[in-house]
Amino acid sequence: MDFALTQEHELIRESARQFAEKEIKPTVRDLDRAHESDPATLKKMGEAGLMGISIPAKYGGSDTDYISLGIVCEELEWGDTSARVVMSVHSGLHCLTLMQWASEEQKQRWLPDLASGAKIGAFGLTEPNAGSDAINIKTVAKKDGDSYILNGQKTWISLADYADQFLVITKLAETGAKAPYAAFIVDRNTEGFSSRPLKGKLGVRAGNTGEIFFNNLRVPAENMIGQEGDGFKIAMSALDHGRYTVAAGAVGIITASLDACVSYANDRVVGTEAIGKKQLVQQLIASMAKGRDIGRLLYYQVGWMKNTGQRHTREVSMAKWVNCEAAFDAAHKAVEVHGAYGFSDEFPVERYFRNSRGAMIYEGTHEIHTIVQGEYALGYRADKPLANMLPTYPFD
Image 1 (cartoon, helix red, strand yellow):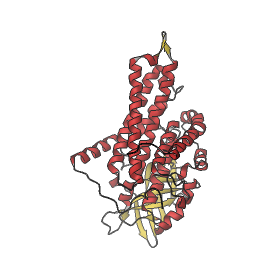
Image 2 (cartoon, helix red, strand yellow):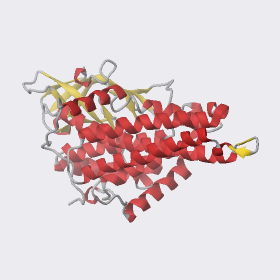
Image 3 (cartoon, one colour):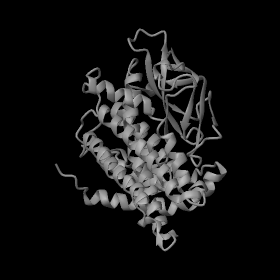
Image 4 (cartoon, one colour):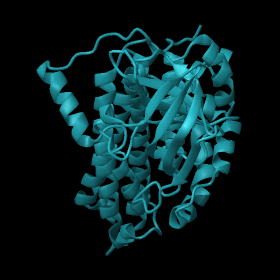
């Protein structure tokens, strides 16, 4: 087994790190303080080729593998979580799900604009009364001739105010399908669509989060992904992709926390020596290094499984669960290393602490992943290959 990254992977890491250094870090503290997002970042990410990561060249993408997507997510979150969130919803939840489930005509219709960043994609599953229990969603689609009429709302939607199109999971009205769910691509310019931002978030304040609403919104039947009854399977597949990007991004927070602490511990002198010489400080920093290295191996494994066409629901759940806990722990310890300064946004570690807490909720809570892993270990849960799988790498 070869754990070495390719030269292409290293170049992608360097490019994503440079983007984060130049385009994210200089403004993120001010945006975070103001609870504002900058839509210009989306355009810059498209111009840098980031929106087409892991999309085949025949659809206008970079033709890079799935490990590359993880690396980009790690480096962008090193800059700020808000940038990684863009990759999670656009590339992971939206584009990879289309690659897995859309027809060839649909891929040709949507993926080129998404790969270039000309259009931004997002995902709609969570509702005010349906989070971890997503099976209880209320948004409904009713067949009406060659269209479906959608009514309902989704909440905690990243890029709610900026995305051009949404992959929306609904229930079906008056259907004979065994599983009464469906998935549709909804254009934000469709009559009956509206959105509004959510304010007062603990973290990811530089990212746009909101609610989207459907009021007798008419969607052409040709915008359905898969068939009637496939909606819940599509949603769960999308979460596998989203969890991969979150797991990889969590390593970025760990690395950022570690970098900040190494710099501070070497510069901060108490008495006659740097605090980095103190064993308790070394223990905190060593724990971060451990979390970073374990986290990378976990998401590299999932990226390899994606490349080779293997179902990875258990493995990506494990990576998301372990890495997000490690990121929160690293950020917590980074505040400890910085002492009183860690309680102020003069240093970035307080932002890492706030941002890392959210990742233990979205894409499956800490508690949900604990149950999932327990059920796998006990033999109560097992995965079967899906009829629809991601294209393997290298792409055709």
